[in-house]
Every structure is written in structure tokens, then in C-alpha cells.
Amino acid sequence: MKKTLQPGDYLKKILTARVYDVAVESALEPARNLSRRLHNKVLLKREDQQPVFSFKLRGAYNKMVQLTPQQRERGVICASAGNHAQGVAMSAHRLGCRAVIVMPVTTPQVKIEAVKALGGEVVLHGDSYSDAYQHSVSLEREQGLTFVHPFDDPDVIAGQGTIAMEILRQHQGPLDAVFVAIGGGGLISGVANYIKAVRPEVKVIGVQMSDSDAMIRSVDAGKRVTLPDVGLFSDGTAVKLVGEETFRVARELVDGYVTVDTDAVCAAIKDVFIDTRSIVEPAGALAVAAIKQYVAEHKTRGETYAAILCGANMNFDRLRFVAERAEVGEEREALFAVTIPEERGSFRRFCEVIGTLPGGPRNVTEFNYRISDARAAHVFVGLTTHGKGESGRIAANFKRHGFETLDLTHDELAKEHVRHMVGGHSPLAGEERLLRFVFPERPGALMKFLSSMRPGWNISLFHYRNQGADYGRILVGLQVPAGEDKAFKAFLDTLGYPWVEETANPVYRLFLRT
Image (cartoon, rainbow, N blue to C red):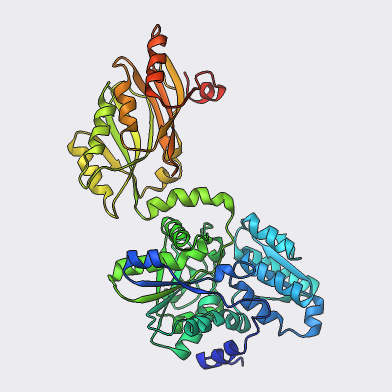
């Protein structure tokens, strides 16, 4: 009968773990800006600075270095969404053995290329870790390889537990809680075992994505629960079924759990960047997102929390999405659908209302409009906010001024798709000219544009999105009556903003022009 390991047993395994042949003792740094905002001390455990940009190297090497020479000669195999794969590949390179890595087809390309660069043989299979795992079991039998589990193995767990050993050694003062991202549960199992053996008063808080919460559901059910599918934004924690040993440890030792959503994680990635100038992957930001949520819920002040930044293997192309959703995740931006009368001057009147909102003027972050109805216009508007919970009050203010408004701040369809769409062909857009402008990002730039227009000209399309630069790029459709070309040219010259006319652009003719 296999012995059930207790925290004391794991303590011995962690203290004797072989990790520093390949891993480094990562820094424990204060997040000064975030700490000031939260009125609590936040410490960042920089596992993103490991040689493979993830903590997974620790557990993989500790397992593999203890294999027999015969096992290493036959080679090893693992299933991984990427970070464990790199840990196994680097460990195999160090130990001189073959490594076959089965990865989900959804794995970011940066992780696939990193594994190949370390000498790993990559096999892509399935949409999640669990799919890749089933395939790796078959290959293990077929080729006589030794399986290196990413989380459900005591030696792997012990390797990850060295992170907790370092945290308690690096920080001698009060420590109220350590926040740990959970995929399969190897990291939190190692951290919980060490902390509960050495400083049991320190809370261990597990963090999962709201769409990949297999551990939380399993603990609630009292047995392991298999999720039918998992969200893939945080690919490093996209696990359908947690391990047997990790489930046992988490159920017995973890003090609590927090779930976070995509927007909160994007905001946390930005928070980490502001304090460290480093970009972590979504899984790496889970702990920071949870600390913010925990503080807001429990109204704590003056406490000390550690967040393990567990990885930084982020595809560069995903940064566009992260940057856009970070503002909404922090609720520094609110989104609205506003209905205004389709008549000259109503656009300007609406902009004046924005300028007189309670709490001071707000920057417009986005404005989408396409003429489509003779009586009413529907515009998509983004505004900066001064804090959480303001979107409802802003919507109510618009309604008081006669503009029917729908708050879209928490609407997934609006955030994912609608904000990027400016309409289509419109029979009402006769005599339309399309121009791209570069506006200075300063208050009054749009009002200058509107005030300089002739009363007889109508805006039939407007698209603007703040990109964080000193200048904003704006697309405008203007209905200019025939014979007013000279006056229109004078308007453009007087305005003084750089512009390019796109009326003859074939893309405009295909998608927007009647």
C-alpha cells in the first residue's frame, strides 16, 4: 500500500530537492505601485525569471535527476501546455537523455519553438492538457519511455515546493497569505506542504480562472471532477482534471480559493508590467488578480501578501488583446451604446454632455458610428472612469439628458466584437467622403473639428479608438453636397490636422460605401 505523504514528509523531500543544477533562486520583490493602491504590501515571487521563464523547471528536473540510468537511457515523455515541456526539455538536455513532448495544438507558438530549441521532440495533439496527456500515455507504452508528470508526482511537487522555501527565507517579516495559481495543482501542493509544515499560520490561497476551475469544483464536490471543456486564455492552467495527489493535498491544506476572469487577469498583467517592466503570461498574473479581488472583498489594510508570478511565456501577438481588455478589467474604461437623434448638432450636443459629466471630464477612448436610420443614430462609446462602479452612474446621466443608453462595460459580445465594427453599406450615406485624420490626444480636439464644420455637412461615419499615443487616428465619413469642394478644402486647411482622403479606397467601396 502506497504511503500517504504528510507535510513533514514533503518538508524533507523539499529540503533535499535537486533543483539548483538548472533553476535559480528567484527574487522576491515588492510591487510598490500596486501596494500603494491596495494599501497592503504585495510581494512578487519572480518565477518568470527562471531560465525557461517558468517555475516548471524545478519539478521536472527534481523528478528526472532521480530516475535510474536505464530509465534516462530509454528517454522520457511528458504532456504539457508549454512550461512543463520546456522544463523537461532543458532537464533532458542537461542530463543527456531523449525527451518527447506532447503539447495541445492550442499551445502558443513561443512555447513550441522554445521546446524545440532545447532539443525536445514536439508532438501536437488535442485542444487541452488532458487531451495531450491521453496521447502521451499511449506513446509511453509504445516506445518504453518514462513519463514525467507535470503535477501529480511527489518528486515534481517537492521541486515546486522549493519556491515556498525561498519565500519564507527571503521574507522574514509578517506574511498573511501566499496566492498560487492552480492548473493541475502541483505548484500549490508543494507550496502548501512547505508552508503548513514551517509556518502554518500563513494562509495559502489557490487561484483559478472562472472557466478552468477544476480544483475548486473538485474540492466542493469532495471528489475529482472532470470539466467538459476549459477556457484557453490562460493556457498554462487549462486543465480539465486535477491530479489525485494534488487534489488530496489541496483539500487538506489550502485555506481558500479565488476565481478570476479574463479581464481581471489582463488588468493584472498590466499591474505587473507597471511595477516590474516585465510581461507575464496569463497564468503568471492569476495570483496578482486574486490579491486585488481578495483585498476588495475583505477590505484589508496593512497586510502582506506574496504572489507567485509562475510564468512569462506569452505570445507577443496576444498583447493587443491584453492591452485592450486591461482597462475594462480594472474598470478604468466604460463602454456604452447610446442612441442620439439623427439630426445635425446632436453629435456635438452629446459630446458637450460628456464634457460635463459629474466627477470631472472624461477622455473618450472609443467612438464608433455609422449612419443607418433616418431618425435615430446608435453610437458605441468608450469613456475613461475614475474607479469601479461608475458605468451605471454615467449611463443614468446620459439618460437624464435625453440619450437612451445601454451599459456595455460587462458585455462580452461588445468587448470582443462589436467595438471593432463600424457598420456597413448605408443608403443614407449619399455624397459621402471618407477621410482619415490624426488628432492630437488632448481635450477639445474633437470639439474643434465639430465647431469648424459647416452646418450643412453631416457626419455619416465616425470611428476612433485611443491607442495610448500622443495622437489619435480617426476615420470620418462626411456628407458634403456637390459644389462645396472648395469650402471643404478650406475647412481641412483651417483645421490644421493631418488628413488623407480614402473615398477612392477599394476597401471603403467594398464594405462601407453604397
